[in-house]
Every structure is written in structure tokens, then in C-alpha cells.
Length: 127
Image (tube, rainbow, N blue to C red):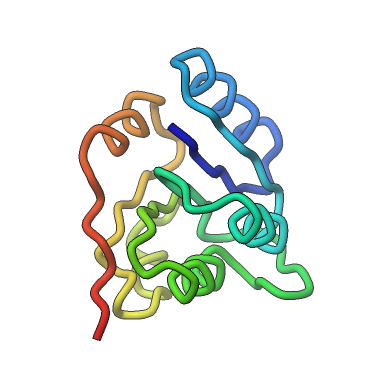
């Protein structure tokens, strides 16, 4: 299974990737929204895209919500989830059609990510 992790926190991202790899997952890492979108465009789709909702803005992608919107435009059925320290605030800032996505509250246990991978995330609604 191929998973894309997008977070500017190198330690968290590396720890998640290491834990996933030890469980036979293929974990790709991106530090920015631009990097995440570039990986997605070249290597997607993924079984799961897990992104922080807030990270330092770069030239094209200002935050995790913009990254998820960009990915949704490419593939409306891509499984995605977000991680944040403020789940309620994160949901308020998401576009309406992304608010159903799972949220992992930082800090979280690797078991929560594994649970997401066992339970399919509902595809995005396409109107």
C-alpha cells in the first residue's frame, strides 16, 4: 500500500514513515504542499494521502486544505485524511465538500493511521 505523508514537521513525518514502513507500507514523504502535489501528480493515486492542515505556505499551495482541493480536482475519489492539533478549527476552514474527511488530532498513535487504512474513507461527493 502506497501512502503520501505531507507535513513540514520532519520528525513527525519521518517517524510516521518509519512506523508505516516497518508494517510493510510504502510511505512517501513531502515537506510542503507543492512537494505533496508534485508527488501526487507523478506517482498517484495513493491508498491514502495524509496531510497536516497547516504548514508553511509555498508558491502554489498555502495549506493542507488547498492541497486537498488540488488533489480532489485531479482525482475526486482519492482517499484523504488530515492531521492537526485543532480538529474543530480545521474543519471550519475546509471547503464544505471536504469536511467529512477523517481528522487525526496531534499527537496521535500509529494505530489511528492503521485504522484509517483498514476502513475505507468515503469518496468525495461529486456534484
